[in-house]
Each structure stands twice: as C-alpha cells, then as structure tokens.
Length: 144
Image 1 (cartoon, rainbow, N blue to C red):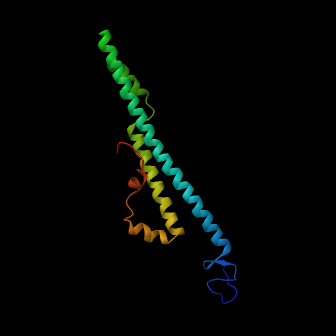
Image 2: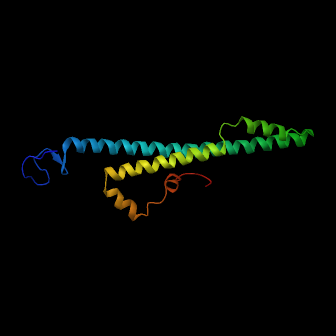
Image 3: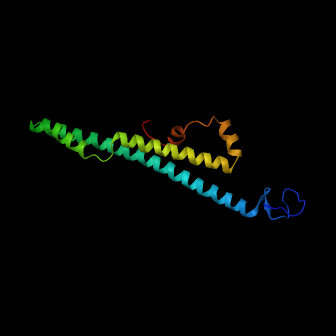
C-alpha cells in the first residue's frame, strides 16, 4: 500500500495503525470471525462432553433397571438387553475420541490464525505457557 505524506504513523494518510484502512478493516473482521469460530468450536466440544456423559449415565441407569427386573422376576435378560443397546449406540467411544481430537486441532488452528492476525497474542500465549487445546477446551468438562 502507498502512503501519502510523511505522516506520524499514518496520521492523515488513510491508514490505521500503520496499515491501509481497508487492510485494517479486513484484519479486524477476520479476527472477529475467528473469535466467533473459536467460541463455536469450544461450545461444540462442551456439547460432545455433555452428550457423552448423558449417554453414559443413561446406559448405567438402564442396566440397573434391567438388573432389578431380573432380580424380581428371576429372569436373565440383562445381558441380552445390554448387548442390544450397545449395538444400537450411535455414540461410540472411538468416534468421540476422534471428534474430540478434531475439535482440539481446529481450536489450535484458530488460535494460530488469531496469533498471526494479532501478533501480541504470541507474547501473551508464551507468557501463560500456551498449554494444549485439550486443556483450553476442557473448561466446564465434567468427569475428566
């Protein structure tokens, strides 16, 4: 970009922070979008953890109900019902692990983009030890 006049850091030249105004606006919009995307990934990550917990609790509750049924009736249906329920499960542990890893990778990529758009973020991230996406995303995650 071309700067007109000697200027003081772009003062009076159509520049913002030493950058052409249109570039500064584009960077600002990109930062805003990246932050929204980061928040969406974080909320999705929390949602996956909550869903996993919900499924696990309901599986355990169903197992206990069937166990009590078998005890009261003298039947042995628990193994059959639990096998059938496991076969019907949509939410398998390996899929959850892969989904979680993909979200963590996405979160890290978004952070990298934000650090490129806002160089001061590198200093802040380094100062706090940066950590891992898993630790950054695990806020609000129940049960580890």
